[in-house]
Length: 141
Image (cartoon, rainbow, N blue to C red):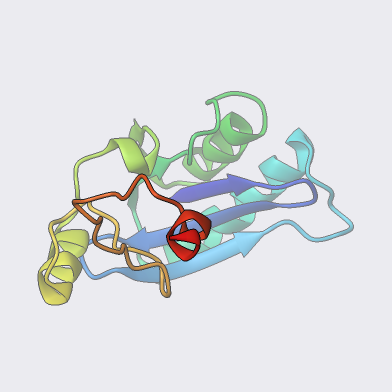
């Protein structure tokens, strides 16, 4: 279960890491807000939906947020709703590459965990010989 808290909402996604598929997602509504009470309500709804989809055990990816307050309330509500909790993971960028990321890396021809350069930002080869003479000095000679 991946968690995210924004300025206005709280989001929870149940993701199958092996297949790289989001199985279920839920978020607070505008009327609920984004406080601890809203996190508990979201946890209750998410637990019911997860059990209906056959999700019985989760690993919590807190997305870099500290495990207290809204995050803890949401996870506790999901567990109270009948879904068992495995471990709480650290930030995804500090974890080892998953099987899905390794497969994607293999398909794209790069090493797992390494980012590809952004589109349009390919690195140019560096010139080995830098000229100390400026263009204006070249024109003068």
